[in-house]
Length: 304
Ligand SMILES: NC(=O)c1ccc[n+]([C@@H]2O[C@H](COP(=O)([O-])OP(=O)(O)OC[C@H]3O[C@@H](n4cnc5c(N)ncnc54)[C@H](OP(=O)(O)O)[C@@H]3O)[C@@H](O)[C@H]2O)c1
Image (cartoon, rainbow, N blue to C red; front, side):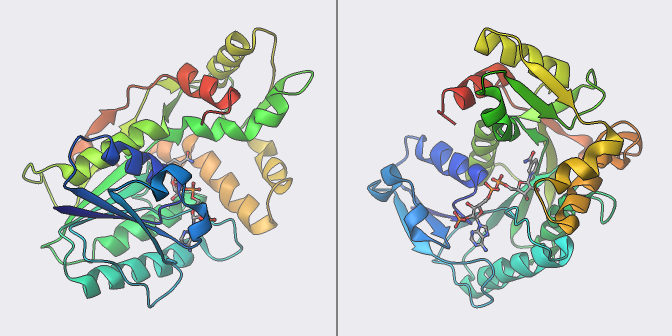
């Protein structure tokens, strides 16, 4: 039997990893998903013979894990006014303490982000830096894999109400409009994390770190794809760099808006990730296969 724990299980990327693991024709895989709210367990998983949901909160220092060989973790977005790094560090310390208590974990796969190597200048991405640096302090006997993902194609879901309005439009924070930017589908993240969890190949390093990206798309490409899918003209409202803070202030508190603005600027032209990329050790980039059109079509049809 291979026991795998997914914590927290209600993140989009966690669910994609669960679905990818359950698609392997191997009944010896037993999954436990840890939810802070058990009412969030998807209906089909409740009755799946290889899946067990458990209650658990990564904010809880007394968090416990079931006996498990392999573990998937990511830091959920929290949108609170807490310090990004400190908050994520506390959560990952709780997961780390639970791993040490369980004393059964052989491998941790962490769903992380491009730019997680930086300790500052990356806004919200500092949560992933906190997670990586905390997991790295686990004993060497535990294999660690950090999957540094690019921009999720599913982020465009936030524009659905605008796109489905009488005069379709969308905002884009990727400027200028022809700036190509690597996207990745959540489904490809799930598939890659599942493969990494189940891989029995000798690790290339510990931690083993790689970037995960699909094709690059500009805001213009996104507009063209939405127009093809909707069969009508779509107005694009590109938010210039100097307008980002006001844009994020409309949705978030001042603190969160500042962190999102810093994150957004970090990957645009002139930003820390664009100008001065500290290469991921080994420089490995893996590619997802899913095209943007497929994901946007799913979003518009309510399938994602
Ligand atoms: N978006 C991007 O383009 C991008 C790119 C690269 C990396 N990332 C990284 O991806 C991560 C987010 O992944 P995601 O989008 O898969 O997550 P997500 O869907 O935003 O995760 C939200 C879920 O986390 C759960 N959660 C929040 N706090 C929790 C807690 N204390 N204990 C247990 N569960 C908790 C919530 O559960 P409930 O259902 O109970 O509310 C919620 O459903 C971030 O670290 C981000 O930096 C994002």
